[in-house]
Amino acid sequence: MRLINDFFNIEKCEGNTTEITCDILLNANHFIYQAHFPENPITPGVCIVQIAQEIMENHTGKTLMLSVLNNIKFMQVLQPTVTPGVQYRICSSTTDSGDIKIKVSVSNGNTIYSKFTATYTPV
Image (cartoon, rainbow, N blue to C red):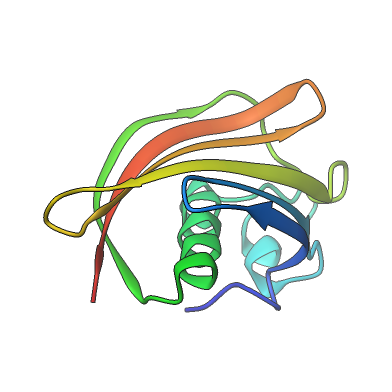
């Protein structure tokens, strides 16, 4: 399921071949939040990771498949009703085999919500 332009929207995205910074806006009215959780919506970790993948797919113009997820840390609860806008900072590199490795930080100001590294295979 694609989340872009439904669960989240990209407000601004800047970058080059190795570093991307995207400001996104979460949709607190999305049906996912009705299940996670109706009275206290919290962004699911899997959605935080999926957003990074979709940002990378937009940036590279390639469809990507997650092959490795490492060192995932959730430091703060991301509530779209409290903090609807966050910034994804993604550093990337391409391996000799063509896989894309990324290092991600999700934050708003000085508050870091999540950090992780992942490897994607173009499909």
